[in-house]
Length: 477
Image (spheres, rainbow, N blue to C red):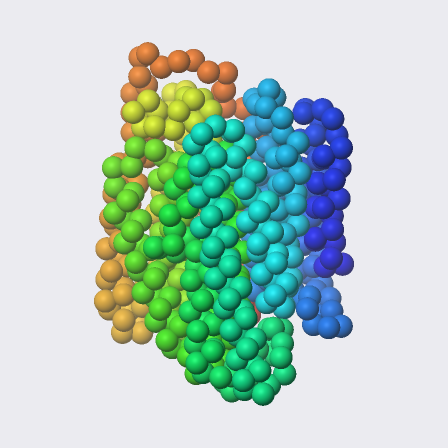
């Protein structure tokens, strides 16, 4: 049944390619995404045993990423129906097919227990997202696509070298040559230390560039700024999760070896650097979609800090992964609506959105408050747990810097968001066709509701799953 997660979206991609009409083709997306969501729910409730060779299995870490990605993709596919109705003059065959192939690739990432297979699936996500970033077919989008492909492909190539080093470390140590995760975790402590250490460095750099950890984040502002809103939501909320899962697999091996503490310290440092970069570049940002790219850099940094702290912070870091994914969905979909209504993403022209697109502007404002850690939304809970863990471990410098960067980012983001939402509409602003309507407002509204609920109450099954996933990383139950 786990292969259905991979094969069903591929079937949907083939079907969407064959449908000749732009209007009808887009309906393939929500149909197959809802089926995928149903299969995902069934697998979460009743998980089958690992495949005979052990390459395929859905463990608690994979379940978390599958749940977040499947929900986000379903919401984005429903949003796509309304969004693409405004863009009928542009063919959407490649967009629809690529979205479904990308869903298939992300599903393969979450069920892979073999690091080689995981690498192939992660590279497939890189390739399938490229035509989505280029959807607008202009000079800026092709530049963003080129930068995205170049940096992410180099990063993935570096990760491949890391896998080669990891495999070679098993040969030198005279262990069974395998990239299966259980075997690597079992033998981690006896692998050749030099090759193992080199492998961890290359894997961290490679998967870190795919995540967008600073200073490996330079593809993000262009890609997020030029891609359609629904593509930006999937990049920031879905693809980041897949890259993070790949890094978590390496984290599992490192934790089982003698280098777990060093790996955590490097992650902690990179996490704080990412937050610092976001705080600097988010200030006085005139492009509100590029601003969201730096917000993504901030939040992968927050997750990296949690992984670096370890112990109880691991639960909070995994919870923040889900919170960030859902909240980024609201931000990108609502700002996509604002962009369409004003035909601009520059704060010089986009002001007073609450008057032209009241629902989208209200959602954008609420999501801004959520993503910056304001109560009662879900990111506040996970960020509070992370900073509490830092101070609880006596790591006062980390806790203090964490709070300082959060404050600076709030101020920088507010200086962009508030004028966009509450400012005065320019008198000479051109009129556009877009107005808030149910197909483009209800999907982000549903996500915003989930973000609010998770800030007030975390369901018991989700809590148990988070604890199980944290235990896989060596965290406290």
